[in-house]
Length: 122
Image 1 (cartoon, rainbow, N blue to C red):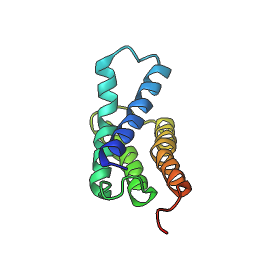
Image 2: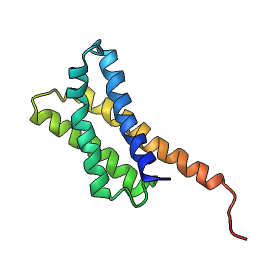
Image 3: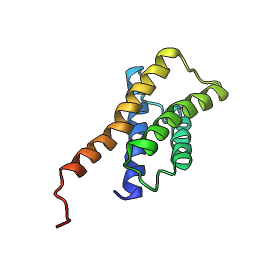
């Protein structure tokens, strides 16, 4: 998988997480509010790519997927706290579960698809 496609999938996971969350809480109409909610998670996601060097094997569950997921959640919540935004326990749990299912989920699907492909050897 190309790095750009993998990075775009990761970014889309975060964008969808925030869009669903804001729509659920009837905050979807404010673009400024969307940006205020999404930026900490995107920064955390980017940090995860750097820490795990995800560009080497972006589709790998370990280390790329797990590090990107944990860093997106922990970094995102940390930056939210530093910027005076809420980090309620329920929000942390929902963010962790949703981002795990999407950031790790697409990697698991990629792994399964790759395993089903016939080998080019022999």
